[in-house]
Image (cartoon, rainbow, N blue to C red; front, side, top):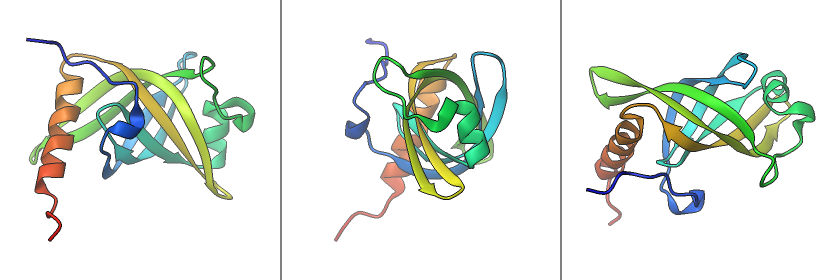
Length: 136
């Protein structure tokens, strides 16, 4: 059986909308809480205010390939309706977009998951997509 790997092309992965907290940890140990806006098997899009974005991305300069910002992420997904599971992952901030004066979106590409983290995210995304109404 082949081990699950994270695919690098974010645009090929279907995203599901989810509103949940996510804790992002910088390499210096500083932890900041943001909100998840969508999740895929390969990454997560988070929303935060100006102050938090500035702490995660110095001078709010969008990351460029090879200069990504390493982070750790901790969040939960409701794999089983009555019991959310915790996900711990490492990754890179690869995207920055200003949405409004005090609202930013950051894209984090997953690099590695602890334990069964990838399986839990995969299961959640698959279940969410299968529960969506089919177009007529």
